[in-house]
Amino acid sequence: MYPDRVVSGMRPTGAMHLGHYHGALKNWIKLQSELPCLFFVADWHALTTHYDDPSIIETSTWDMVIDWLAAGVDPSQATIFIQSKVPEHAELHLLLSMATPLGWLERVPTYKDQQEKLADRDLATYGFLGYPLLQAADVLIYRASQVPVGEDQIPHIEMMREIARRFNHLYGKEKGFEEKAQEAIKKLGSKRARMYTELRTAYQEQGKADALEQAKAMLDETQNLSMIDRERLFGYLEGSRKIILVEPQAKLTEASRLPGLDGQKMSKSYGNTITLREDKESVTKKVRTMPTDPARVRRTDPGDPEKCPVWQLHQVYSDQDTKDWVVKGCKSAGIGCLECKQPIVDAVLKEQEPMQERAQKYLDDPSLVRAIVADGCEKARKLAQETMRDVRDAMGLGYD
Image (cartoon, rainbow, N blue to C red):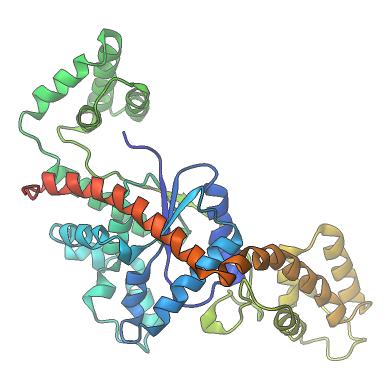
């Protein structure tokens, strides 16, 4: 019914590091060449945990966009925008909150988990409780078909689907819907009309999921339908309502395999990161001072790569020959720890070099970044306004 579209965002809470690159940005760069993508700075979401000190948000917003561009996100392929510059997100969030059961928000696994992890902050706010609903609005307003997430975010996508389903059930009613759907079927032509009816029956009476998919595929290929008739026929397949908000699918992304400098997950809160555009001297110093296998007290002591954080980085950055060299040299004390670390230094600097080059023109002329974001905000807002017109009409708020 609606074109495939990918939506994803990040909170501007500090500099992007290599964990972000391997965990999310590389996937964004791949997706942007496959499907229409919208990538946004989730500045309102940053307020859910930083509402008492928002000073970091503005600076981090522009730095983060430069990091995205440096990493390879292409504004000619993807739409880059700032959440708060598209106020329709807030409007949809408000309207969805009217019909979303409180229990749905309270059961989101990350709600209590984050409260425990961030025990030093006062998170007894509606903004924190309601952030999954704002997250749902961020996606549903673009009728996104796919949302790239890690496994821990799947409950959020399931809730988005439930919210869209509930909205369509409550507000997808239309006076004379059955008659209008039947008229729309006739516009398919006799052969397709018969096929549509048979597939709808097979799905509704026999529960055949493949029949539903075949019918949807047929409608996608049909050119002579208006958007409103297309909505009716998609809704008629599954019941007696129009589809207003699309149920998104989770597009699973591999968890980042990049550890921090201490072997834990790379995270600002652990102080174990290398930022995307960190200078050469700092990167070199950080890697050279990484902890190693505690058994290697002296240069002549043999070690075990499996007990060394540096080995975890070799798993990401080194080819097989280098890894074989590390294992042999470490276990025999044939190489020292500084020798072992040098290929990591070289690999990280090589990875960062094109990022530094791409970022420089935006650092030299910040107006280029502002222009990209302004253009992206305009494109995103047009799409959001289309959805909100349908939402308002469905809820009886479409009057002038």
